[in-house]
Image (cartoon, rainbow, N blue to C red; front, top):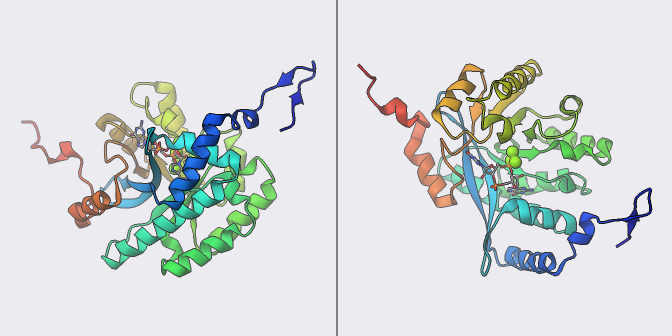
Length: 291
Ligand code: C2E
Ligand code: MG
Ligand code: MG
Ligand code: MG
């Protein structure tokens, strides 16, 4: 740890220092053990199109700590990122997700799965080749895997990140830009990143139906994405009205508690089987029309 000082000579506390508190070190050790013991699980949340078809599933990591209970992903992912454990966590997530995709395919369920990757992963040498090798090992076609990245991949060594992403898309893996709108100068990034999908951050979607400015932001984002040939997914859709507004704004797909929260694997299988080829139907659509 190197102390950083600002221009006035005052020591600046960096997150690096915070990451070394005993609590975080304890959690880090526990996470390492939890991965080895397979205590970390993946849950899956559907992305559905407006005709009800399931466009894919997002794998979301879940950790129930034996003493602390559920640890929120945002918390332990930050720890994994600042400690060097991230590549190990991502390998675990990719391995688990691809194994599940292979089992679903064997059952006739051909649904693509999206895995979140951190900027760290994209900067790990050999990442693209390792993903391709893993797909081959599981006998899963690259088109069945999507990787969700954020604009943060371009913060450090953008050229190297762009090369890795180009290699991944070259293998046939689809890239999705997550949390769109929360980074800095998003437009520049859109041009530089080889993504085929853009996910509008929940913070713009949540109040879409009641806030005219948020609605305008979403409208412009959808139009911009479409003019660049990208599909648009809205995150965090919790109610009917938001669903309807997004449909009217020509968003392509939604993800959120209105449809389903992230579910454990067996529940996801049952959910997929129950929807069959009809896809997801809005509960209200099943009610008889008012006279
Ligand atoms: P994200 O990728 O943007 O994932 C969406 C988050 O929104 C998830 O939180 C999901 O459970 C939550 N969500 C979905 N629908 C709704 C809704 O209708 N309302 C509300 N309020 N929330 C909703 P979660 O699972 O806590 O994950 C948080 C973040 O942690 C993720 O954000 C992602 O950045 C990261 N993450 C999760 N799993 C992984 C992983 O396997 N690897 C990496 N690198 N990051 C992960
Ligand atoms: Mg995501
Ligand atoms: Mg997101
Ligand atoms: Mg998020």
